[in-house]
Image (tube, rainbow, N blue to C red):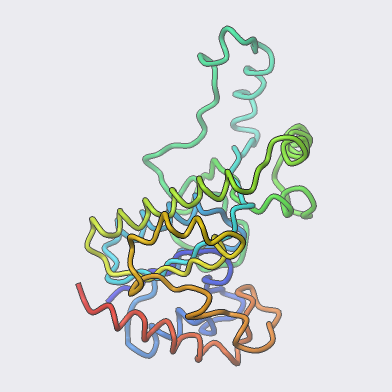
Length: 261
């Protein structure tokens, strides 16, 4: 049996704390194979790509964690792609912009597009190569020490936050992204549970758009919260290693209540 775990840092497994994440504990107990796809700091767009990979690899169960909407994806401008942006800036005018728009994202490569810059196990998959997209929280991109954005991108991002970003709009878009990821799991006939709190804790009105999934699969804050499991250790997946087995108990029970395919 293969268990795929998708999400952000709370759902990762990490080579700096081997065997300590709840996903690893569940798979060790049941002699299952873990497909660790979660990546710290990523957006719901990236989580949706993780779901696609879980489907492609014929996972038997999926644990899906959502994240907050203040995480976005931007083109990765490296030496190989810099000419694309130079061409845009040199030739830009409003009459021809639609003809020279950059297209760095390659749909056929899915999750391989995403830059994996952390010690999460997902980075070790053989298909994680030649990234085209940065997926990260806006605060980390602006204030983090390892941001891969160019000076021009950082300047534009700050202006975007000050003048264009709207949390409700982004939350709505992310809701549609995650809802469609669930639809793809349904079509693939793969049992799954989805932890919705990060995406909806500020505004539960948006939860209506994903209520079709059903209470058996949706995990709300009233059902489960990482905050209820003691102090947070300095681990890549945040929760205390001492509490990992209890967290594994909860997710394992929710998985088994789904039944098999």
